[in-house]
Length: 83
Image (spheres, rainbow, N blue to C red):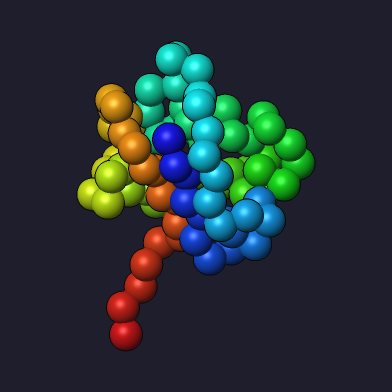
């Protein structure tokens, strides 16, 4: 699975994307974020406040509790504002 990080999530993790194989029990974006947070202090800082994080699975916006299924790509980003 490709995991993408945008804006300050990219800055905090220090990477823009990673190729990962999370365990089978990681089956929602929220669970994926928790698993990622356990990978080290940079990821823990990025996912410290889940209320500020949005997600897309295979380029479709989803709720953090949506099922990942066989997702090829998960993107995490802050809320988007228009202007």
